[in-house]
Length: 87
Image (cartoon, rainbow, N blue to C red; front, side, top):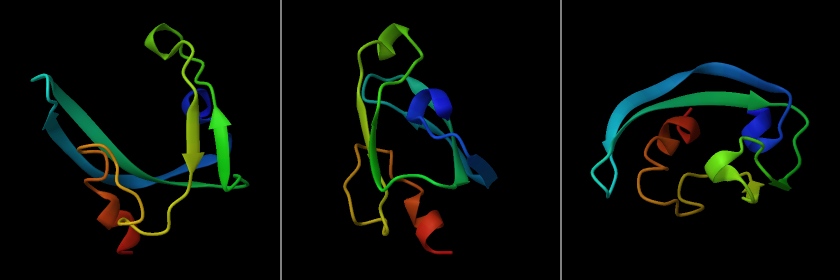
């Protein structure tokens, strides 16, 4: 999480879902969705991932949402948000 988001104090609560998802290019991705909690995070922040390779030069803008319908996410990325907001 630190490498991808810059967040340090992240705690894994539990696995929400696991699936096989077919991308537009035909590639099948084995995906895992977890419920995490984080302490002491800003409302919004910008982060440059440190993984190198295809991530080189990327800048991510992060922010929190309070409902699954609050933001439209690209295809497939919001598939399990209802499991977070229904508890």
